[in-house]
Length: 351
Image 1 (cartoon, rainbow, N blue to C red):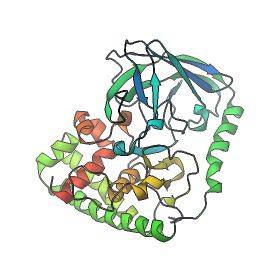
Image 2: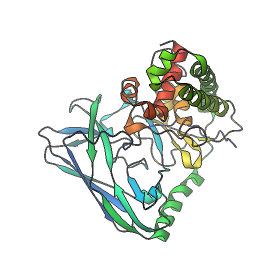
Image 3: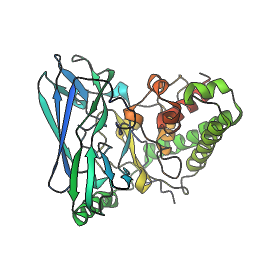
Image 4: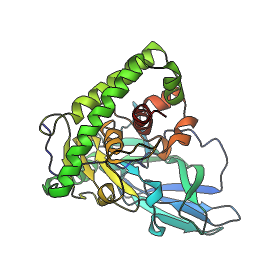
């Protein structure tokens, strides 16, 4: 059942561990340790000769419960079920960054038991890897990414304590208020209507449109890829087509304190709800006619793809925008939220 209580847009910066950039050297040394039962402390050292201005939002330096950790049990990877964000790079402010001087070490701590199910207890291997985005010292414009990969730590976990940490995190949703009213409610409903229209057109284009357009965004135009993409867009159209039915619940209250600088909105796929941040309403138009622009409709569409019932997409290493999507592989694009949003925008605008 879908409840329009505070709508969603879902800011997507979270996961920095999907793209294997860690084989390339970079001026960051990241070491981790497990403190107590499941808390992870990361020490990030600038080993280069120049200061680094690192984007905190959506990274291991973010206070929000985004994807920061890779955890493995004897049976394989332990799934992440925390927050997925979408960031507006054009609306970042200085407080979104951490300046690390040459030779300086900064630290960050978090509890992965909140967003990984470690309730079975026992031995788990923990690692942190991916890429951090950066800007020049006198700018807030993102310039590139720096890959990193930490050491691997084996943790002996008390399952009962880990289970309590997880329950405490997920119970936060009970304090959400039904405050998506007035102009915010109108904007939310308009975004969903536009999302449905974009998804229907994109589904048709994926099914029988130009092969070159599929290859441009998804690196493939095979019948299998077309079928997968068309089906995802059909599900999106269904989800955006109703404010009273469907999988997601939409809110405007920042329950998880994740609406930091540049964050448009976020989603918690494991609970099937999405949250609109203030920037969603103040920084985006309803529907843009500019190629590869962000707007309320494509942001909603982007975030809907994160829902496990739709596709369960990730945000490959905090990869946003057309140029980054072009750098991904076919398999990565097929499960990358921004690829779907950019494709839908391209079909609508005629990019």
